[in-house]
Length: 316
Image (cartoon, rainbow, N blue to C red):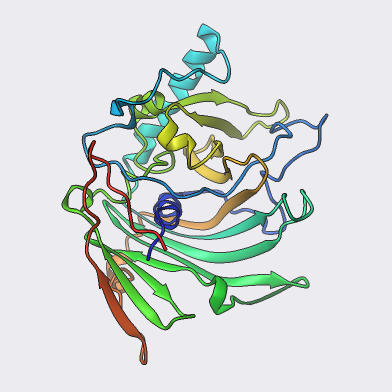
């Protein structure tokens, strides 16, 4: 069964449109030690997976949640700066129709491993076509300084066609179709619990998250933002998200996700971006899933809508 966290991560990464070609050997959001410029030394994390909220019902509508307390205070000048960045970001996001990029991710297990040494380093590809088609695939991993094919046990391959999310599970030789409920069809990607990256709307972001600028003083060509959830249903999935936007084009460059335990974290960096490719129609349809020879296809119906309007995806 598809865990909500997996779908969140899949949808989130489908929306990560970047313009800068990054150097693969560098991790822009790796934890820094105290005294260094940049991100605070407290540890970030991989997202634990969330509840999807049907269209028209923002997380703030949850009746049982108390008024959130901001983790920081902004001056009027700082608030105006955040407002300006979010508005520019929203305008730029509207221009994105298709993109194709590669990514590199570092997965840190701070609880059971060194805090500054990634447990896994993996590479893959992301494709997207507005408004709701996408592909996310991990293809290789780094071992002993060499890039090798990903093991079946860690392989990730997802396709969304707007009506279903298709999960390729090579270890089980299964293609699992997770049908989306009607309220999420056509909106499954843009309405994920982490809507920062693509299709970001300034007002919705401010209603849902506490956001501030954390750009290091020596960084001139990027904007660094940090977002904390305002409501418990989001805070249960991640502690905070930190993301980098390139000033040229106002497009994302990297993302770090901090889990609720405040220790483990995952960093994504995106490169080799092609935005609004005029030849996309001639390259075939990458969002049409197929069942590999010898595999079994399994179809899962949409989960029942729960009281209060939120629907949970099935868990393993």
